[in-house]
Amino acid sequence: MRQFWREAVRQIDGTPLDASRVAVRSSPLVNHTVYDISFAGAHGHRISGWFLVPSGQPEPLPCVVQFLGYGEGRGHPVDRLFWPALGYATLVVDTRGQGGSSGRPGATPDPVGLVHPQVPGYTTRGILDPATYYYRDAYLDAYRAVAVAAGQPQVDPTRISTAGCSQGGQLALAAAVLSPGVAAALIESPFLSSVGDLNRLPDRQPYREMLRFARSYPDLLPGASDTLGFFDVARLAAYGRCPALFSIAGRDERCAPETGQAAHAAYTGDKRLHVWPLAEHAAPNTALRLAEADFLAEILSQRRDNPDPPILAQEGCRR
Image (cartoon, rainbow, N blue to C red; front, top):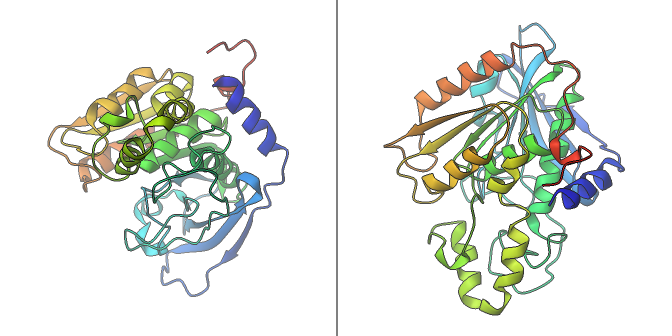
């Protein structure tokens, strides 16, 4: 795993980030500056997002890089005001190829073609080889998004946090593990954590896609399982470095509580865990948002000079 990700990051670091942004003049958000932003992700594909900067705050600002749940697009800037309202610059990152299923459209296509049988959706695309799997590109896009945030003139590059729920939590954790630029991570109900027997996955989206694949192509399961091992965030968590707040919903029937607990247990950086016994998957949770706000205020107030490189990139790492 270590060599795979080290080589993937090395390759993408050798290509220009090519970030661009255009101020959205028609935005109704009078107390924020909004930019339509894009950058070169995996394979040089353009990844879109919103960059929101609250007015009247002393710069440079801490920044939250916000990743999205499965099927969700960046939507409209008015959908993304929680962190800007608290004084954080916020980069909302589209997930390649997704958007629209939640009513919030995306603006990022996924040009990668099909290389073997799959079921509709993204979770089994390219799943027979780690080099072609959909989430390889999605993880590298997330890694690049942190670099984009660090390069914005309004952002303090030493005070960047990743954040997300479900697939967003998966991407937030992956970006925090891969990037030296992440000072904190907010990981809520992460998807693709502690994935073992594909036949035993919950019959809920997006795991339902993998379950259908397992039923339709039982002869392909060994290869698919091997590939998932490179992307299982409960395994990636063993390379965690920055402080992280994990949140788990006790009645989550999609990303089961024990899978989020497995990621938390494996995480090797400073970590905290909130369990909400009565919460369901991705349900609105004001107490959680306040806990996240307190966590970031504490962690990002601490000076962070010359951060250690990611454990995956360090010489002598044998995991």
